[in-house]
Image (tube, rainbow, N blue to C red; front, side, top):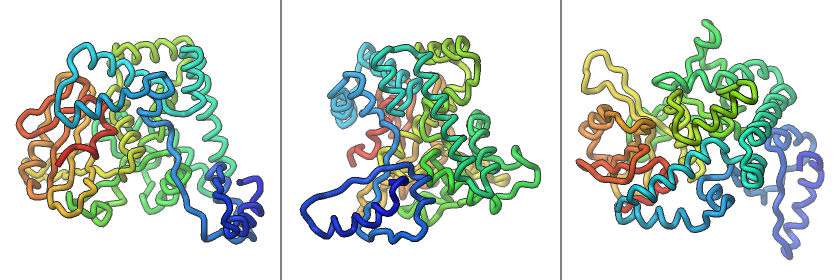
Length: 359
């Protein structure tokens, strides 16, 4: 619709006619720019379109019904068993490497050639940068600097976006519009710090402290490993086989953010850097609200672990401090499903099912 803004205005009369329903599509960035001298129909209902989620990726790769199997095991809290778990981990790693951009997925389904898939993803990244230059206006250079810095920020232990890494004089108030531009363009997923885990996470959001994930993990893999084609293919194959030891945490957490966002969850994390109390000093990767607002215990704290050996010290502190508001705590990890000590340990590929955890 960005090419025909007048048609966007005129469709109001067709909608009023009542005989048909209409779907309009187009580049979000361009649509937002091409509104001069037109009346936006009040009948418009905006639908967010994300990269393909994990279930859609399973459909595309011929694994129809696979997510239903996972739902059944999750609801019964029943482990899948070694063979089935390893099969799903292979599918999950395919999703990490390929991502959810339809062009890249189609190429993977047709050829299974990772070099060709990577070339498509790099073309998409180049198109993103081109759109930033074209539509970013006066802040385009700041937008581009933030976009290019995402992999380096996510490779850090805390993964929060540090503006000082861009410029020692940078202040968040100068970058509010930058993050909003990237967020509105659906290029990134922004995760804000919640000051406490209550029903209204958005009302307790600290918008100055945030994590910035790339909207598609497959694109992040290609952006992070900006190497010659042969080396890049080797990285992709190592990640696909589970033999990549570098930056697995960055990739797993970005993937969790992508799947949670595609499932309809706004993204929040919790962090307390108290110097006075070790018991208060903690960080939890994600907080998700259960839709049942009649219950006090509706906040699900989530920790993401990319390695098989790990600790969950922060999650333990968090449970003790905020037990009155918490639903089932979750650890997403590369191992099979299990429950232990009141914590539900889910395989990373079950991230989209978190909202379906039984009360």
